[in-house]
Image (cartoon, rainbow, N blue to C red):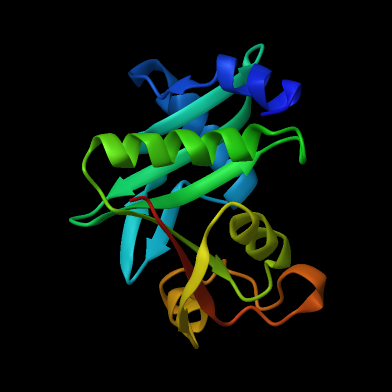
Length: 167
């Protein structure tokens, strides 16, 4: 691991109860809401377990996780500064936690427009798992604030799941 990732990992810690309001405000700023739509369920990402890195009082990076019967799902992953090793450190900590819980896989989802996320996750051992055409169109019915156009001017329509085996 490079020096940047090592120092990022050293400051990384589990989310604690006193972090919740700051996390809620951070998710509101970065995602537009702390409520994330997953398979028709409204998930309060600010209430989930996960890991955090802070830069003084500000959140530098955050991962929130949802434990299911056979896998752990990354619900949100944010690093304020790209390419500083924080996102990788968070994903690795999530994988360690999932293994410790006896879960066999780490799952994440992104949208069809998020080319950076697709690259990031595949470079960290995730494989394309499932394409759900029209998933974002359905989520938009529950949350009209979801935009029609995503990154790079790509119409925001579909959801792509990626999975990493932990065995």
